[in-house]
Length: 510
Image (cartoon, rainbow, N blue to C red):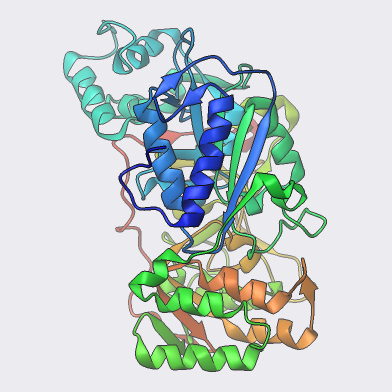
């Protein structure tokens, strides 16, 4: 066979061969760039697994590029158009917006699992614009839009490839052109699932209903899902269906963070030996910092990673106190974490509206200020393609001990949030930040307890997940101290789209 222009290691080449063989069974021949009907109705699922830096994303990106060149349509979940005869489709998915944005930043057109499970229903008038942008129809004549607005839409689509972003550039709001959301009825062909170590069995079953061919990409050294029985979804797969990437490619760039992550695999390394390694690395390389305290300036956009909820709550209160946040209100720029959506079943459409815009559980959000209606907040969803919206909000600030949380900002129903200045390492999986602060005293407590999770000392899994969230700089915080902020909270760093979406909750929320 002829490999792509990139140079693969032997284990990447073996994984490439395995994936392309499964694709061939599904009617997609990458060698000859031929598309045909699947050889049978058999379903296939394989996994490509490896630790951080082993080349999973490179393999996924190269497979995506070759499939697109072969004529496979990439489905984003924004808008799909008419299904063509003999059309073959691929969706690249991640469990969270943040994980999907990590892939998008590397040129891979990823979306969330939720955006594929539920598809938007477009107003017929504005769907004509979507068809025109996608090359499936003539330039429409829309009474509500000028030629200049249509030109702006075409320019935005050429830049971003997103129909909603293009319609927003034309001056439309989401409620103008999306009338609702429905569970996907027609299956797709191929699904590439990144961060599959985060999936639970129910999510995999949902995906198998949609994709006859699934390729799972995951890291076996991460923490298993909280809802699982202690393992990951690819643990139960046959060995023949799992392809392991062993070589650590990013170590070629002498990455001290990855060096530390992979040092955790040595059974002779205990917590105190590992902490000495962190200190020594900090003396050699500025990308590792052996920090005496938490930096509050970083917490607004990059949460401190902790193990225990009690630590998380203490750090959140220290952060708010350092910024002079009033007990009964939020300051613009405060970080939040979406904890779900509290709406009755009769308002299912509103729930889907919010979730489709990125307000799924675990989403990292920045509070921008109060909305136009009582109980509404203006929000910036980190990692979402169109990040800014207004929604009915319930914000809970948890208290230490058994005290009830206080709620500085609340509608009667809507999206619920916890404060996001600190998060547990479990919830940080799938996310990455430029600079990450890891609260080492928590990991030391886990080491002293001697707990084991999925066959490995828990403290090592915690440390591995936490430090591999750092893209550029790792700060290993060794004391329970917080530095004063050097500047007030703000939102100037958050870029807004041309027209923000307004997602109203039901009348009771306003």
